[in-house]
Structures are given as structure tokens and as C-alpha cells.
Image (tube, rainbow, N blue to C red; front, side, top):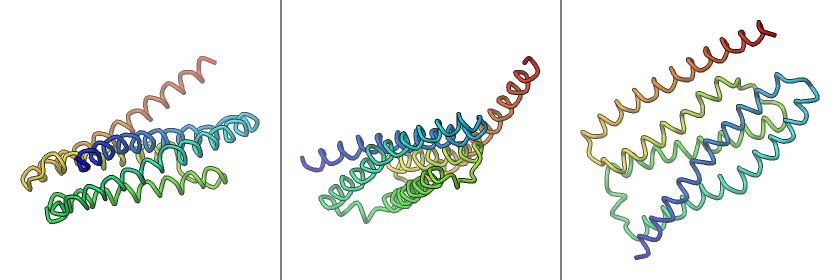
Amino acid sequence: MVYLYAKAVHIIFVVCWMAGLFYMVRLFIYHTEAKSKSVAEYEILHKQFTVMEAKLWWIITTPAMYLTILAALVMLYINPGLLGMGWMHVKLTFVLGLILYHFACQRIMFQLKCEMCSWSSTKLRLWNELATVLLFAIVFTVVLKSALNWIFGVLGLLILSISLMMAVKLYKKFRNKNSSKRTLNS
């Protein structure tokens, strides 16, 4: 019964962690785009985004990550046989990638706070999609578990990654085109 409670807690906090990561990078994008505003507007926005990012990071995202990991460790303690399964090794590799992504986001947050971040909003949009790819990889690995399905899963991830990159580039073109129209109409 403890295993099922740990599993439920694990799933709940994975959702919270992912929501925090997705929204965090979206805030980074808005924070970066605020640099194109006037100096007075940017100062106000910079202070607001810095507060929002810190609260999201330290109150939701990071605690959710640690609770996700804690619940996972409880499940592995109760059922250590999971560590002998190949799919679990693949999953844990993707989870390690997600943890590294988490701390890379933390570094970006600190850089934005100190106004030393050189990432463009387009690069941040692409960065945001990496979390999506890792989430897909983890879920498909856990659900499918077999080697043949991993091959199809990897192909699917490649297609998803290419699709997401194309969508970001199309969005940038669309945005630039609409921005040009607004400038001409002014």
C-alpha cells in the first residue's frame, strides 16, 4: 500500500515540477523580451519578473522536483527489482537529463536577475521544448517498456523534436511579420 501512495505522490509532483519548468521558461522569454521596452518599462518589468521567477522556482518548481525524487526513491526502496529492468535505466537517464535541465534553468534565472543573460527569446523557446521532449521520452519509456517500442519511441521523439523546432521558427516568422505590419500601420 505504501508503494501506491508513493506512486501517487510521485505522479502528482511530476505534474507540478513539469508545470513549473514550462511556466518558468515562459517567464524567461517574457523577461528577455522586456529588454525591447523603454528603460523605465524594463526596470519595472525586470523587478516583477525577478520576483515571479523566484517565487515560482523556490515555492513550486524546486520543491516539486525534490518531492518527485523522494517518492521515486521510496518506490525503488520498496521494489528494488525495478533497478534490474532495462527500461528503468533508460528512464533514469532521461530523468537525469531533466534534473540537469532544471539546474540549467536555475542558472538562467540567476543570469536574468543579474541582467547577464545572453539568451534570445527564440533560443529560450527552443530550450522550452527540450523539457517537452524529455517528458515524452520518460512517459513513453515507462508505459511501453519494450526495446522494440523504444525504437518507435525514439523515432517519435525525433519527429516531435523536429516538429517543435519548426513550430518555433514558424511562430517567429509569423510574429516578425505581424510586428512589421503593426509598424507600417503606425
